[in-house]
Length: 635
Image 1 (spheres, rainbow, N blue to C red):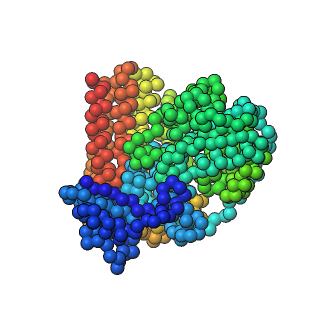
Image 2 (tube, rainbow, N blue to C red):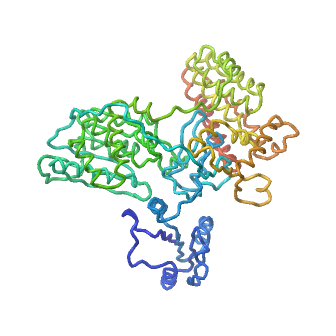
């Protein structure tokens, strides 16, 4: 048996206090040896710290990058073995940097959204919850959530060329605008004599702090209040549930909300709020819900193993089905637009709850409780007031704070005209225009024309066999899938997308136009020579090479295409024809009652994601699921 001992320098879930009476790692190795352990491996991000340190002879030190290999090695040994992972808790490191007790790395990590394939490999490599999946015009991608990033850099591992490191430059100081609405006292929606509030959220985001502020506000108003916190893995972003009872008379019963007893549900985390356990405490026709609609993915979502069932709208609808009234607020988006930080999200939502009339305390008491709490007072007060404003006029608040996102691809008139002609009588014009323009930039107008004609053919066949609505659904799925496979990201395309002006503008807005940027690449020639890590290319030096590669894209697929000889490139070229044949076979089986099955076949192209070995593995998944989807049509 192999035991894993996590030596993270802090007591979990209690604010990072040092463990009193703890043993250091050398003493632990000697103690374990006396207990009869056969072998010990210590993994750490800084093996040099162990130079000159005397461990027990059965112990060795490795870099944390060798963690998986060390686990396999220990697993193969008979007897008891131990792996000691010596690494400070990442959340504690972030806390120390915020307090100025630990130097903050200058470099930030950024992902070029266009280059990203959304394969989840970086999430697998880092197991970091700041590596977030995001939905875009071109499907699922990945973004680094800067506010919660621990600057661990383990997400940089792997072959993906979408990563950049950025040393921020200067940018204008963020000015918080005036409130776009006038704050007024709300009409109460709950019984002022006794109110039971449940607040499900995420550890480390201030759920317990919000509970304490709410209880203090009740006391300041002369009311009785008590709370019960069910704290999960707070240091790792686990679930936290807070129940607060506020009443005019002392409460001597059970504090925790039970089935159907919650008067108010303040959903600080959408996933936790939509869970069966949370919804069980609500009562249709009675409970009022205020929900943060920003989705914070779980670890399984980050790595792509699971997704939220349905959309965020489905989750909100599920919550609404067991409540009598629901206010949905995109609180995290507003918080980050205001402060560049997600931590004020819960206080913003508390402000929305107050303005919705479900908190039986006064605004004056809540603001005084924030001052008494003493942490980030002005930021917290601002968040509370903007939350109130969002409950009054969400559109006005969003308009004041959230800038519209630029289109991912500039659509020229020729692409738009071709899209309109292909999509005549359907609603596909916008989808096609974006992809036709992108494929024109990817290769040339003739390549985009081939794409458009192929989508036209499939849409027409589907409409003739199963009706116009079916033709549009199948055509849309095929348009997305065929574009994904035709616009495979070889060296020419990666270079073009790293020069993309939309991505450059987004980066400049986030980090300043004078930011120092490096592109993290793993060139095939270096990989062939045995280099198993990326290299950082200064963005200014890489730009001329990228422009040369972009100009050479018309060599793609010709005898002069030196990159096209690689095995993964041959597979990518073959997949286009393979997918077209697959969809033709599905259309041969199309009837009115098999439309969903044909759409499922067309959707399998979305499985083809990633770079190098990750992509080749996903190609096998695509082929397997495509065969199964096609077989289901005939079965």
